[in-house]
Length: 220
Ligand SMILES: [Zn+2]
Image 1 (cartoon, rainbow, N blue to C red):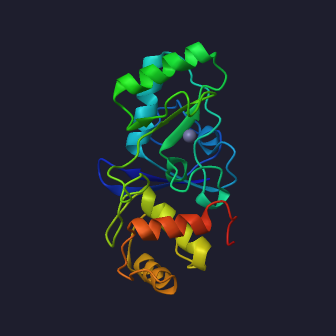
Image 2: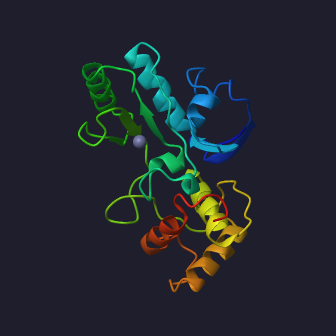
Image 3: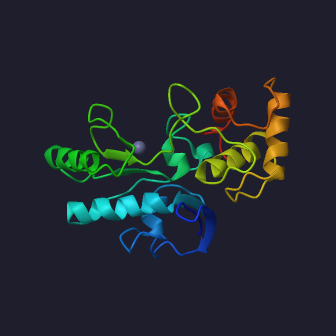
């Protein structure tokens, strides 16, 4: 597997070649690549160092391993809302094996820890605990991904590149770095679709791009 990590402390993208049974970078051996990949079929994964650190600390506070069958997903694999944090590699769906009472205890711990920007309320996810460390503010009022432009870096750039490859066959190397190639592909996508071709992934661009690519399968 190729694992891209946005090292948020150094603000740079790092690349690792790892097997499914090896530990995720910055996860302190408490999370395997295969666990993070879950049911995704992707040979390429991405996340952030601070997300891994939040998982490690949550697990330490909990005091025992946390069952995690589901985390990362490519946008073209679908299965989540249009601007899901699972496509960003910043979200975890865990603790499906616990009683609802124990699950509620973990949910409360995750909320109280202050480590996560969002912990889904029980009525929205009764059978598991969803926690994520999303970047705020979202560019659309209702939530979702942040504004991206030339020079942006990180997991949301990975989604943008992935979606542009899927929507228009842009052929960009997914590296999490918004450079000239990504800028050109984004401008083209905007022009072709009647959006303002300003090379910025704003609300309208994200809405259309994610709607066109979520769950369609690679290259669809
Ligand atoms: Zn989730």
